[in-house]
Length: 440
Image (cartoon, rainbow, N blue to C red; front, side, top):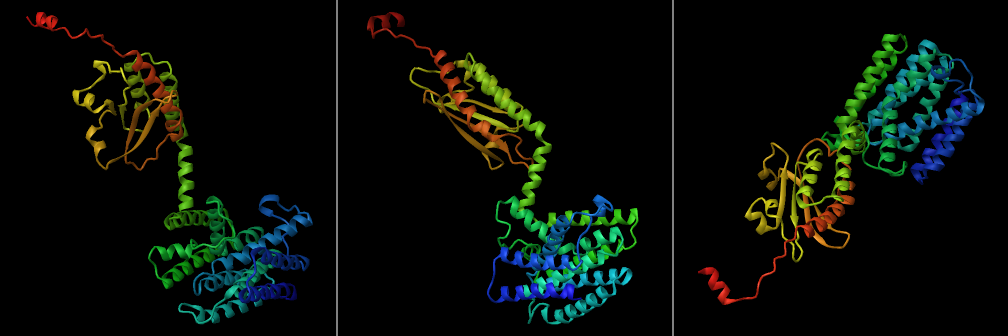
């Protein structure tokens, strides 16, 4: 009992000081690490990882490191979910009852007594901590409870079967562990410091979805109860029971995280989806690269138009419109102008994918990118506007290819091909008699 309550008292005093004065995360981890080392010295330690290494005993320094990591993880996990009245205490109650049942079946008796005493204390506390609360855990309460539960798991692991020793504590602490993993992953993905506070925890996201304080707490009680029940299935481990527990956990966590609507995981899913679509991205990127190379050797304006149509015919855009800025002395070949209106408006060429009406791109059903065409000689040759219909499918193209190398290659090709197509006609001096003779 002294082995557990001694370091637990140290963690409790740390929490009291943090509630009164406030301390940084590294100081907290240092004191908790000392308390975890005291557990290790008292015989509560991780000596092997049966699932991975079998019966092989770990070196003392690895066992010490794993013990400290376990204690820090569980202690701070319960502190992390202490964001709503009654949430951390209620979740801890379910985990404590699991620790009691495991100790009842596998020993030792001391854990039975301490677990049921802690469960009674939490239950009495919840009478006044449930919303609207009149008393609160604070860091002193949440850190103390989390530390005790981590110690109970270490003590129970000494005599329990392999699967019970490893899986039951992890599953029974499912909600705080899930919250911790999600918080760390979110902050790493978004590039924020891991120890920064935010309002994107599971209970915050549920509040944002319109649930009341009490509804959120009761729902998460249910989640904690499910984790506790699934962990107890592992008291009699078989291949089918283990598979069932893992399947239910995996599906439940996946569906739950999807409904919470975390932006970070949505971005991660987009990257994964883009990775699966990498072959199509290769095709679209190569179409733009190939067009950039072919534009460098285009001989005339009509060939230039064919290169553009071929490039956009095989990528994710649905149309493009080329508007030219003709320099002095340049005119378009007559066969390159689709209509007199286009010639007056300066529009040289407009292309749509087969089956897509041109009028579609004049309304809000599409979005567009306008590329300024500036040649290497610093001539402004007009704009190329590319259109894409709104779609749930991501754009499978590296947009940098379209906005950097390609516009310059197209502008240089226009410089070259329009200069070749210029038709300069020398007019005679005004001669009245010549005009009269022609008229006659």
